[in-house]
Image (cartoon, rainbow, N blue to C red; front, side, top):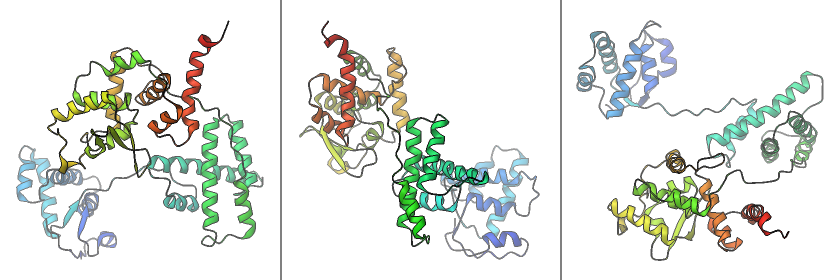
Length: 404
């Protein structure tokens, strides 16, 4: 396919000229098919067959030419060959421009106003589409509440008083404390962003004071508890035993002995495995730097066996940037864990792949490892998070330890 820019100048299709009639170097699949379909009847099936042919060429790495046309249409009926032949003639007429796949689209709910759109675009802490969706949903809910209040003749604005009223409505509607605090956090972050952008969005002093008041709105107290179950020592032995492949066994020991998160397992590279120092370098969730943790003997043995089977032992020096597990996804890890749990009758409510991380923390404490060292191994930001394991251990042993 040619890479030279093509100047589109066609008198037959003025509508198409307004969108695509300019010097370009390439089309997306959808742009090209729209251009082809511009002069066809709306009910025509030609664009559908043409798209299938173009997608085939992209997937196979073929050019859109006579050879790929022959390969694609060899076993097709004449009524499908004709649309593709017409498309190929059209494609050659416009100079055989380069074609690329359509960009992936993300599904983010529409924002209630332009303010939310700008905030979501510029918020550096919202890294994934799911976070953006959650914040957009929360902020939409608040501004819809403001509109409803104004429609009823009630005073409402982007201020601390209105945010307090909104929180109360969420409580009255029996939203969970977690959800209310999440919504409130999104509103507070938007308010702080507006204050930072006060000159750009031309805020007056009264508006700034109203926004500052939002920071004083209190969230709901939440008694943080474990939402994931954990395994007993003998149950963990069952899950880590009798595994079909060396890869699956390696995945399970990293979860069940080292306490890694599923996403951390997928990020492991050969250079993160230090068999001499007995250390494992882990890139944590939402982190940009790696932390070293103890590389336990039981885990080292299993990983070494897997490396031997895949022809990477001793560790190849020139391939330290290679992933330990090629193209492994978190949903595949969850499937591996669920399969083992079901196999041994241990799959129950609250028991999942992340439960193996809880299991590691719980069993380390029961084996007498200090709370500080468990925190360091699991890489918790605060001691409070690690103390949840202590609370669970206390509840577990309460009846046995209390004197009669």
